[in-house]
Length: 501
Image (cartoon, rainbow, N blue to C red):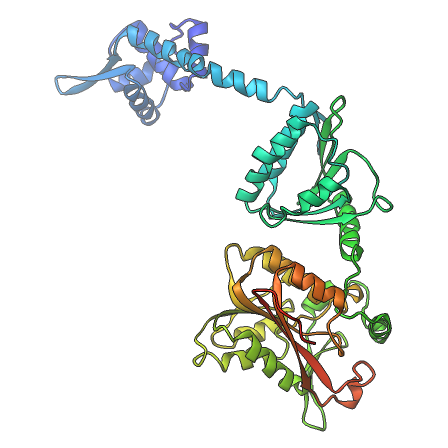
């Protein structure tokens, strides 16, 4: 094999994408002149089939030309000047991008350091900014959980970055953020922009939250934390599922218990319900509920009862109540969402209005795999088999004319509260149309709690009505439900009005 080309030239050509065979072929033709295919194969010790491919690549590069002599193909180098132009052109592309490269270096001069394979350190204000960019780039989900404390002392440089770059980019990507923040004048002002900036903020007094100039964000399996002090500003991104799962649990506890907001104002009612159900909520109940096969039984009175892990999820004695909820949720016609399928009583009643009220799509969210399978057998239903906490995140840009919630609380802490969290979430996700109607199962008998009514108004629901629906409650349910009626709310966006209870 010829080595006519200098070692330096051969090395440069290999770096510009030339293969070893291409270098050998070019070097041989340069030193020995034009050759036919078989002679060139012999001189370079490259097989005929392989050398044909390499010759084609050199012809494309305009380094080799093909001619015919007595109808026999001959190959020769095009012009030694072509080689010089090739190398010069390759080097020139780097000078063209010199300014871009310099801007890149300037932007990334925050000196990231790898302490561990799963920990990254970002130094200074530039580093803090880049850590936020990295979080948005890496975030595979569409929700971030964040703790931050004092925002009064954040420097103007970072404030401008958040307002002009970070928040717009996050909103554009559709990434929602839940924040727990220290209560302060600026935090209250910050909270007022929650809807526009795809965010929900809950404020905690300084008695329960440390006054530290810092922030912590949780996304996917990553922890993003930083200090905003101008002299020692830095950020860390740590990828560790165990650490993040613990912090998520802490966040959820703070989030859930911050307001202690229930549908009822009566603590004795809450405690009575808790005590009656406490033993039923076995460890790891939510995960087990998803896969558990329901039991269906007929009582001697002819009633059908569905139970999951000992919990009575739905019974046919509730039919009159379901009929009322169906009448309420379909008043606007259009697209309907129902969360919680159970025996399908509510969805069956909804479908009865399909023609008279011109219903569109009818979507059901159901977490239990067996119940979801039964729902799929029903014509006209779009069935989403997921926890509603996750499923609602997928409805990007989707709005409904009516939403009904008849989910079952999957933890003791959610009893009398799951509806509250659901309503907050559908408002966060803007899932109801401007005059959309919301109705839901109420785990309270006398009236909606005043604080709960205040929340509804704060969320934009000003047309609020509550109907009492007579119910013949079976004896077995009397220990849990001692009343002869259920409450059926009619909650709608609109102009302020009087709530009727």
